[in-house]
Image 1 (cartoon, rainbow over the protein chains, first blue to last red):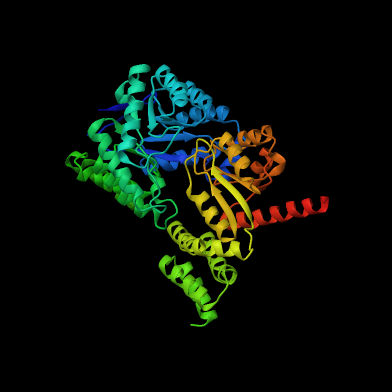
Image 2: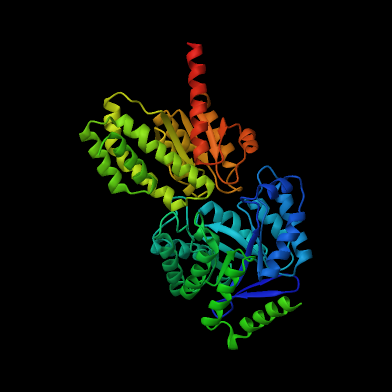
Length: 287
Length: 223
């Protein structure tokens, strides 16, 4: 199953036979006090740096989140989407929990976007899926509902199945435009959590066959040497069936782990991408 | 082992999160005739404060904080009934929860650990706590303080929704409201009308104690 995302001039395909899709997480004010203040003042200059660093790092899609406290998220989202699209031709992932911000971002976007995200809660499904359909976008779905964030992989699979059914049967969204988030949890909080995420990935790949994405940085939260943890996690998740991740695309350690796993899992025929990336680095050193 | 050695060992074992050892030392201390208060205030609480300080400096990591908290909770289970018997009251009651729409709980759990360590009775409502559930819990437990945690900028507006629900239920004056979480600032806390904000778990405990002392002083002066 292949999910196609597009900007005005570029197409990115997410799928089990494709190179892993690196979605850059950085355009997000969460935990960035200075960036939050800038956004509150309507200053988007920092976004230019974030775009450049992530593109240079190997991002294939960029997540855009403008959820700064006390700021006008709807207006910022419109401006950010236009700004980022003027800086890069990478497709975007429009990220907000505010339905109006998603709607405004989708309206401003040129191409086929990814929407981040909807849960299995009935009111969220009812508010967000019509937008996804109207804008012919793809959507990330989180298998948690009003009751719980299930820990058990089987229960997550059940909720994922429910979302897929509602999205396809009730809203006419194509199955390939649905990405399930198997829920990455911090290993530092409980060392059994990531194993469950990996099991969930395996179940979803086997039973639903849809594409998946997750917030890879969650896994190493609260631990030292975060990039090393992430670069062990991502190849494991890829082996289990994960096809994309929202991650720190600026980290060479993480991106190289992904590219090496692509090579090892036969997503990089003749190792062409791996070798080309090596040559590019060597050329960079020489110049 | 004399009194000082036992308290030192209890402090050290809590610091490294050795639950079975802390439990054994608690029982040993009781049979040696140490009071629950001295074990709590001279070993367990100072140790947990040190854990918090190391965490703030980046010398300790999340699992270390959690396991130290667990070690302390084990001892508290033995000591709590004894403290109640001897008339040592809890510092105050704290109802805590992560707001609706938000599933993050590590930070909240760390604050809970530190609050318990400081002698608060903590009632944890978990994550995704809707405004009406906060109201119910305040009515049921009559806490001194209620705490709202949000890790996402997008779920912070729930603070205001919670405040409105508490006000509508006529409970605003009966409870101190504290807010916290990674994206939260003092400015934001002021805007939503919270009584207190803290940037981390240790600061939250200090702030909670301050607010409580101020509230009690004000209540006392009215009488």
